[in-house]
Image (cartoon, rainbow, N blue to C red; front, side):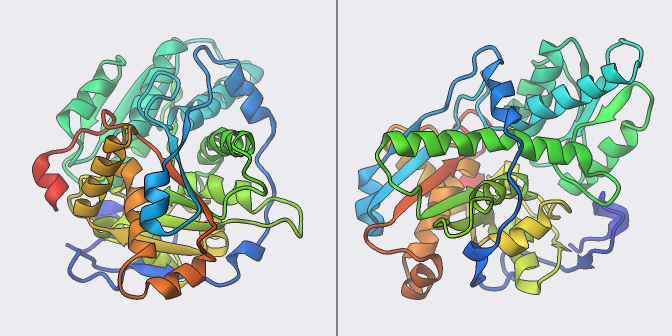
Length: 392
């Protein structure tokens, strides 16, 4: 299947076209020397303060797993466990809550009538549920577009938040396009976690919302007496919004401060960021089935792309079978993680073991004393997946 602008993409900008499948993807690894020297501005400090005012807010756990450190030949491994964030089984509520807060505050300041808004979005599962959850709590409406491949139980969880759900026969990019069209009315607003030219402000607020997760990691590592922060942070990637937040956090420190290596992980069937990094420009890929439903995205976010290009040290793509194995490993160690969250461990294993591992370790600056942080972005309940999908 070949990606085309008419059928698949919400982005009106210039994007290269490629065909892809697990059999035709290039080697699923790329590295960029010099990423740790790149610098950008920080996220707004008020985001963390806002989240602290929300009912039920608490830092999610940062669990140390010595078994994985021994397996992978590093000093310490920590997992940021996002299986319960503001009452939801994934990190997405951080971005959705901050963005909706900004939307409603701006609307009130403009003198708009106080009637409820319809918050429109497309989702592979977690983001749509988060938007619907925030809408329900704030007395707003939600309309969520869901692409093919999302498990019926994940769709039911969105419906349970009293959202209207439209299921789309096409891929994620098609769902985004239809959501954008549906939001073009006076009483609706698109709250999408990917950006394209002409639609970038609200996705930017969502990225800002994710900064709270990184601030928590800093505090938790300090409490664990980890001097100087992590040596490597591994982040699952769909369109790249969370990775943008991670790059922003770790590349906005003062000059001379040691910055960690940053590794992104994608499904082999939807490795749009890896392919874009390999080509040096944003490209879209045709996506296939993957148990990593929340990462099944074919086009990088336009606002994320510059951060990913300059700030990521490396990118890797993993098969569903390795994400399933990683989820089982984490479950055995007491961490609930769905395939998307477990992709971080699958990607770390791919990077640090097997043929060429010494070169990849060198590219990431990994040695036997390194401290690694894995971002497990969802719990096992977030995006149910079939056993068949887990074997893929």
